[in-house]
Length: 481
Image (cartoon, rainbow, N blue to C red):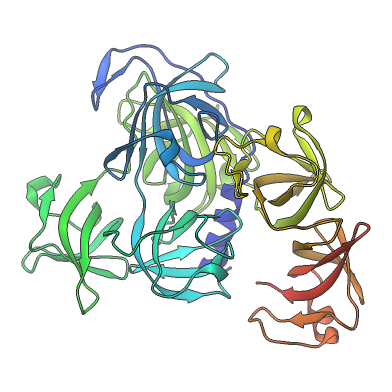
């Protein structure tokens, strides 16, 4: 399996959170960053929704919380679905609701889009490789919403989860104004303290004129997690005005709990590994969901729930492995049962969970958007996976584009099954083709119907067309990677 495929699958599974839960802790009265840490939970992961701030299935009230966005004071309304945040909070006994004391959002990279590889769904932004997948949310100014809405030179802000190799698995991408500054966060390599230069992945950083802070001995070293802010010169070098050492470890004490979502970034053994740079260990009593201890490996996508030991490690009480989000439906809502957490789209039953990421892309622009706001006839895009014959939604977005029964365009994406020209099935939806259907390969080139049907079985495909009953009549069918 290639690195790109591995990270793509890891990112896709990040959106499919299977369950969440953690309890409170005892009190110690110690203080970190000015917060009374009387036994708190430190949580880190992408925001899945609002109505408070929802991370890893837990609803955190933001009343009275200190919210920081890129080192500046902010509010809940400044936060977006898919942004990776760190929360320090107290939880109730159920572990499903809490009161946030501190919420911090800090993007991974903000700068120019330099290259686009649509076949691999990869970007390079300010020298950082960014993997796009079904788990990536896009800002409203990116039209169409997805990698096809991006252009070389766009100023982008990317939030996500870094792999062991430094690839950012994007959970949200925003287009920023041309006057926005450049910044990057990553592991420093090739540090030259004489010339005061270093690299963060492909980006060369000149910090000779920068304000430097947080480093032991006053200088960065290879392996330090750094954040650099500045401007690009004509040679593509980031001339930093500020260079700071960052910590990937969560700020927990022995009286605190942890709930961490991310990729495995270091692996020595199933009892000694890092998730998003945070050390984790397991015990004989650690519970596993969706895998076993043998499933832990570099770039595995998982959530760790546990408590901190005296050395700052998370002692895992539970480890959950993520399901890959490999299916997409785009069309009108046929029915909705908010109390039952279900809806029907293109005739397919869809189940939402506490971890489904909700975002309203329609003109209504409801920030605290949830299934309770969805109505029959609304146009939605749903991404997820199939479990027990049911489509489980990892992401649900409402949009203005008309679709589904009654006329407009619908779209399905996923592995092709029951392939027999002129028909095939995707995400449980029957797709039929005719003489007017346009067939394309994964590079977007035109191919014959015979070539498409020969290659389609088991391959991921995308079909776009109109709904006739519960069947999609495809105006375009294309092979995906």
